[in-house]
Amino acid sequence: MIEIKEFFKQQHVKHYMWTEIQGLLAFVIINYLLFGTTSAVGQIYFCIPVLFLYMIFQLSLCWTPNYNSRFIFNMSSCSIFTICLPTFIWFYMNVFSPLIFLELKQVENCTASGILKTSLDGIEAYSLLYVEYTQEGHSYLGSACLTNQFQANYYNLVSPFRFYRYNDTFDCGPGIVDYPITKTNNKNQFQQDFNGQSLNQNFDITNGAQSQIVISPKNEYHRNSNQTTSYNNKYGYRYHPYPYYGESSYGMCLQNYTFSKVKIPTWMCGQDTQDFEILTKPKTCYVLYYNQDKNLAQQNAQNYLNQREQNELAVISFDQNIYYPKRVFTYIIIFLYYPLILSLNSFFQYSTDWAFEKVSKSRQEQQNNIIDSNSQSNKNLEMGLIENQQP
Image (cartoon, rainbow, N blue to C red; front, top):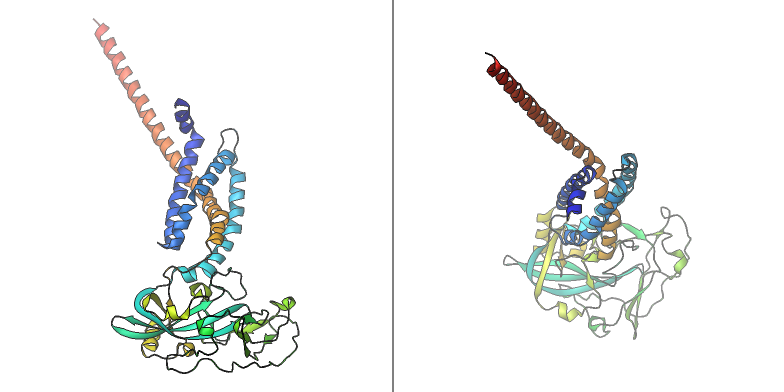
């Protein structure tokens, strides 16, 4: 116990501890500013033992009484800061924050009334759901989605974390997708939109125009659609928007999104294996009035306008917690975010130096005052003795 107390009394250990205390305070403030009270901040604190291991590692390497390692510490911190900051900002701004901070409002009586399916160049089987819901006593029509990529990686060719607008581009895929048979994929059953119009068209087996693809730079080539559809007893409805070009052509050209005015992010969608009839039963869901004019989006939803044709629309999610890849985020926390936070200690060590200098100066002044006081007392005592010795 005495050895532990002596350890913490050492000057370099005190300096380290006060530097890390400032770093932890900055850590809490930065977490609040970046992530608020979202589920992501809980994951950050869950990984905090790794942060403390990093801190102990710093103590063993950089805070030693035997030699001055400040230059090495500052250089390594500067390098880590330069590498981690832009990488973390890219992930935060492009992948996580667009969905983490969406303002979802709870609504009731959400029932699916129609479904449309398409293939996004074979990369994603995407289904647009028409969903009726109730909010503050009024009925609205919004858009939800199903996909076979609802837990896609962030580097998927169709980015799962972003809204696509009409004619936005993504990398080309294989050009074919198969939907598994579900109750809404039965050939004898029609899917209805909210006006009762048939959403299934041209489901006879047809042959698409077989054109050749010329591989060229992405900015020069856009694949044109010649969509055909067929029915298969194993796969149900099969969508063949483009001829199959083989895996060698993946990502070698750009494809336009033209299915609707807005594509809902994949991570906001449900799994495409869900039974459509279950979705037609009333349940609680969450609405986001998307794009610039929230009031116009709500008005379009209340007027039951076709959401597929609107830039301002009501986006429906059946889950309040938007999906994001927690494993990838854990890697970002451990290998980017924590080192970035610890690199700030290069700044905090100087504020600690300043505080220690002030404390040391104050103590020195107190000691000097005590010495002066003792000297003055001794002098007065000597003067008193001399006066007493005089006849």
